[in-house]
Image 1 (cartoon, rainbow, N blue to C red):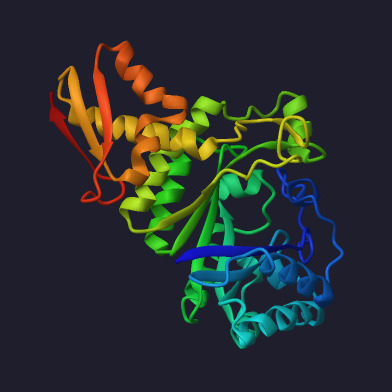
Image 2 (cartoon, rainbow, N blue to C red):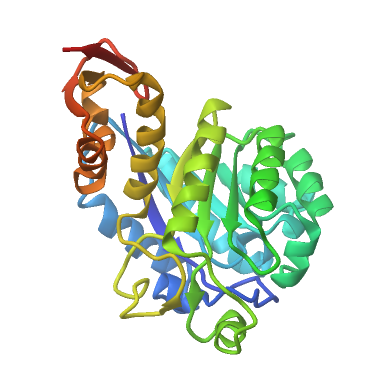
Length: 332
């Protein structure tokens, strides 16, 4: 069954903080004009394009801090989305928010209106990194929020960032370990980009902040993704989606941007995984699940080229018997 999101952006609504990295108007290409009628307009537009069968659809409120919105507006938006749940047009509602805007009253309202998934912008579980990023909350507030959310029937999603001010690869890996201990269903990983008109851009231009290089970000994420997947946690996104605004020609001033970032990460994951299987052989047939063939070959066949440069001939073939992520080799 195919999963679809109907994205509704509420940039900066409900959020009193401007984290050093954040300009939601650039990131979402949206403004703060949102009400119940706009929710209906967006939902109707998306539903007219989606398949009618074999689908799971959630209306998603992204950007800002949804549970920090004025309660009257929050209820209006939820009630409009819930109309589609009650009719069976969509199967649920998901939203993203801050850990310090979670309490019983807010969660009771979410449950009343059919919310199925709550994502928390954790970003880091290192208090020094949170402070340097201007997040306005502590790691303990993340733990408190998670404990409370888990008392409700919501799927839990956690979002982390890499390359924040005061961050290191080791701190990011430790954040990932702690996130795994919190046992969310989903995770998103966002390497930090320097977005125009943010304090982080000022720090970067004053040479007080150095963003990750593309290679550094890809290398780190290629370690983080298997950590989560091996723990049974679904990694639903790695890096911000490339758009006209999220691009070097748009709002991205610096940082590890690539329009196919996830493919680069998968390339490194499969390269490391398959190298273990090669065992010094020079002519190999590599069998993977048919859906993994392009990942095994690498972005623009990068892995094939690297093996060829080492004098190794690898022929990749699909094998339906193999689960996703597994591989077998045969010497020829």
